[in-house]
Image 1 (spheres, helix red, strand yellow):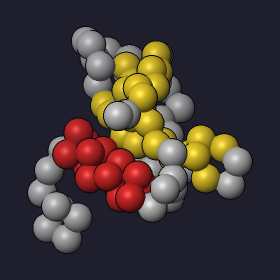
Image 2 (image 1 turned 180 degrees about the horizontal axis):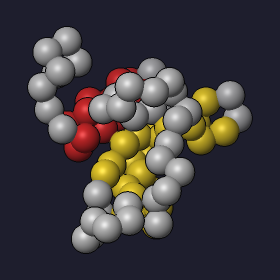
Image 3 (image 1 turned 135 degrees about the horizontal axis):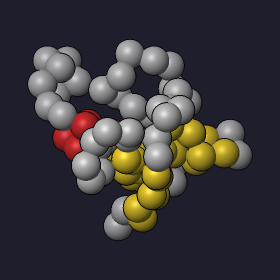
Image 4 (image 1 turned 45 degrees about the vertical axis):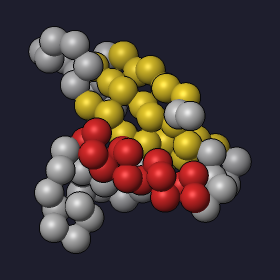
Length: 80
């Protein structure tokens, strides 16, 4: 998945959430709506690191912590 670059945002979210959980780091899944897109447009993990919830979106080529600024709605989902 990571090496081959095959998969979409929910695949990468599930894989990264498993890695964070295995390391004992609290993690949630964040879903967002974007302008002009019906329904939920994207999902990515957010992990509690250095005292704050930080985004770790492996499908974007931006550093950890980067998020879409133009999201019209965000919802964090607890992972079991």
